[in-house]
Length: 358
Length: 133
Image 1 (cartoon, chains in turn blue, green):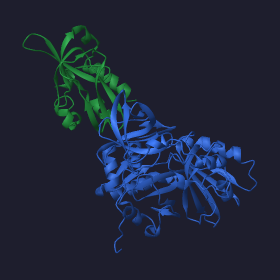
Image 2 (cartoon, chains in turn red, orange; image 1 turned 90 degrees about the vertical axis):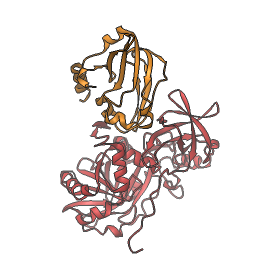
Image 3 (cartoon, helix red, strand yellow; image 1 turned 90 degrees about the horizontal axis):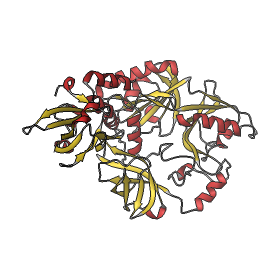
Image 4 (tube, helix red, strand yellow; image 1 turned 30 degrees about the horizontal axis):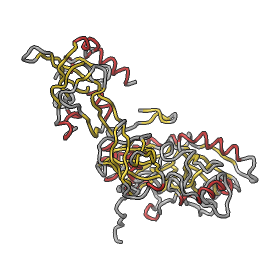
């Protein structure tokens, strides 16, 4: 167990590689209760959330989720978040924002700072400790979850959420994840989570479902080319550099950092996020310098050994003129250079989902 | 090797000291099961070259796991006289049998005083128990 931003969490239950393969081939069960869950209620909740994030979210129909960024005035990324449009038992609309564990306090403070200037009726609360969150990810996730819920999982599209029950407990199921596989995230009362976890595990263990720790969560998201806050994303990096253009709407909106992002959009010299493939089995880890000849052209933000591809891969930021796919570079790994090539992200893409009968 | 009869460095290498045909003392060196388990998911080992002079407490190689990279420190001073090249192709040997087939190098000891810093199995066990918390 390790301390992860105040949460005691396992890096692995058995082995990072075994948990990784189980998620790709069967399903992995992740306790992601550490993620921050913030609620926005009141008639102007949608407008308030919208005033804080880079992407338009106030037009989402009920049951939709959207990835967005919270940026500072300079356009630097304070967090990457998911915004959900939910409806409570009495039919009232509200918003939930799921934030990174390590950024929860910062985002709560940011919200407090912007609340007084917002002209509208909204209340913000932090449900992180009252609710728990499980991710069930992998090709078997749907058929394992289906018998435990009345929700029509087959009808759920990617980035939707539904209020339902799981194993008899009130729960929200969202079709989202951080692994590059099909999967679901389940939000439910903290005091119900152990029972639901046990039921999911019991239902799946004969078929290869395993509990997964932070280690495989990292290798899975890595292969899927997804950035991780604190590595690929931080307050000095803007969304365009990170390749998250789809998460930024600049038109007819206002939010902190918008004008800086308008300017950033025009610039072409900011370092950009790339994927790198190495032949060396030595892993280029965070902070390693990337070279073109004798010139430093960038820095590694994370590196690992890819269990699926069976090779060493890395992500980093490089100067745009050296960022083309195929570019041959070198990485200084603890004092010695290793050749590296820029490759297209993601490193891994799951085979297109085939539904029976289609 | 019987783990209980080995000597250990604070940095988790084990040492077995034997005397060769010429009367010289040769240390077989490996990584303890505790260290191997803590690393998990081994990816790569970098071994020293034959004939390399190594110094007690200094790194002579590295071991890479999915989680992290760690130096392997020489527990004694002397010359590398054998290297377990089989590990390069099959690192599972180290994971499965750290005190046997997973041995890493043999070092002809030049300076026996370096042995005095090593501890016995019971003392090492105590260190591991503390690190586990």
